[in-house]
Image 1: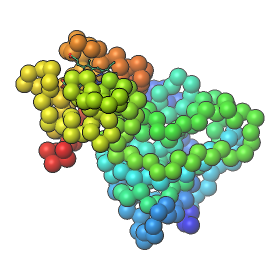
Image 2: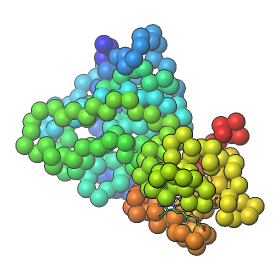
Image 3: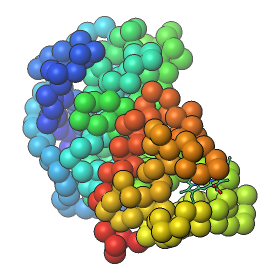
Image 4: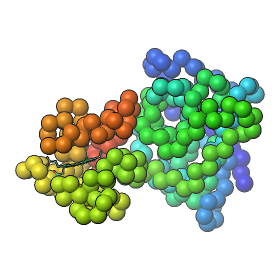
Length: 277
Ligand code: HEC
């Protein structure tokens, strides 16, 4: 096992975000251990900011320590707009207070361990989360509630196994499976409007497929979110397009994170090419 450390402030400048009152200290470091999940791979295939900088230690302080272990795949798909991190959130806040960037690899055969040190009593959740450039929560992949550990002084472990952070995979698991398949294919049959959004079906049912409800409109137009019916019905103002209000479906699941989720779905559509179908 190799131990390396990555500074918390990798590619960001958060000064413009008003409710980010907690400044990073440059002595705060994320400790990452890399080992192998599945098979031996000789190289860590870092896709984007593979700036792994050696040697640093976490500052000693009060509070809990949370240790995440995961095997991450699909990270290269996230684009430079999004970051996978272990992040702390105050109650009701959708901007991370501290975020420890998790290096993403292409293949998922590298186990990553990340430590969030000094998690104070003002923190309500520590999350494995995809954030945008403002460090705003987009989608929570795993989470622990600090209240549940109030009496514990041990390191809190969050072992999540394999996580696929490919954009479509995230949308499938965290949007479609949660809020859509009960009407769109989850109970067998083809689903409302002939649209099946279950795993293995959703992509071919959506991408460059004509709407059964709106003439001349496509459910998803590769590379063009605004022309896509999926975007239109989930966006603000899309309530009346169909006979069922889909805008509300998304906002009731994601509440004040909904705008970030809409952008994430748009970014997935915009980077689609015809051959991804
Ligand atoms: C409670 C049931 C229900 C849920 C939940 C639901 N839908 Fe629908 N959906 C419908 C119905 C009904 C229609 C057809 C509406 C019409 O005829 O105007 C539809 C139509 C659609 C269409 C248009 C299909 C076409 O060919 O025109 C899309 C795209 C769609 N839904 C996506 C979603 C997504 C994404 C979600 C989850 C965020 C979702 N739906 C959740 C019931 C639902």
